Image 1 (cartoon, rainbow over the protein chains, first blue to last red):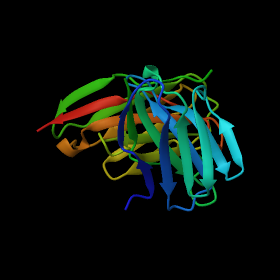
Image 2 (cartoon, rainbow over the protein chains, first blue to last red):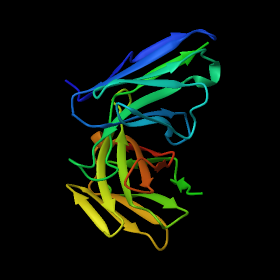
Image 3 (cartoon, one colour):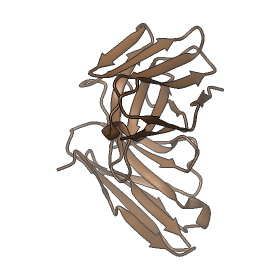
Length: 115
Length: 112
């Protein structure tokens, strides 16, 4: 089983719908991240969380919200999806106590298409 | 503002060749630099992480170098194999926290 699991892996939805992408991890890491990847661009950080009570905006947080339900769970929501949110979304974890600073471990990605 | 560039965007070479992938960054004040491999439908896998104080890291047939003063890193792949076909991404870490700045990647195809 993967250490970082994302659900759903693929989702097609319509403009205006609310969508939630979920991430769970078994690595015991405190830090969790949501990134999006668009063709021809590098990954961009949406939100990150250093523990259950800590939520921070990343580079492109507009139109997104997150919830850190537990140390192991970090969800990304699109309250009203729009077509330019069509992308590949990645969840990642890290823990400087157990690994190299900045070392990230990724889930397999969630491909979202907004029509 | 830190920017990371990977050229070329795509590369196709015959099996068995040694090859070099390039990554350049605009600000030399980095904490570390990582190389990742991305396979379709399988997420990203960390290959090598070079701390700012290091010049290179090696793992098997892979060798990554770092020259902060010139803002460059290279990933050397020896004796390439079709299984090396993937997209290779480099990311610069600005500090010990979350500030990873990513290149757009180089899509590598190794022809049998």
